[in-house]
Length: 157
Image (tube, rainbow, N blue to C red; front, side):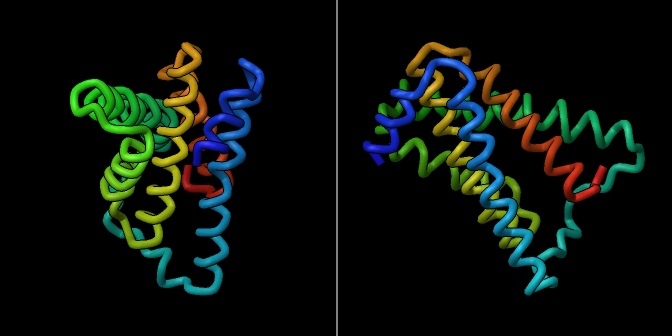
């Protein structure tokens, strides 16, 4: 873990790190899609709130979710775990990924994919925070891009 952390800290300041994480975030999504191909019953996510309006879906998925989730699950959670509870980075990553996954409890597969995504979002946030590179803004942007590409891929918007 430390080797990966040091490697990511050594990457060029702008562009590479967020792009690297965006690409990494596709891995759990693609694995989830492959699993659903072989076990279609895992794609049942009937407890996701249904939004009637196309525009409301776009606003919720592409604007509200990335902003709200990044503020809550990265900024606030990181601040509490790091500065109030004084937890180490690995504990922060583990707890935040579990919390992020459990909040996305639409089905077991979705929870697992969301845990991995939560881990990667927090890892990105921590690295950007360490470098003083606008961690909130860039993490929101990466989250937005992931949601946008996933929504187009899944044709759910």
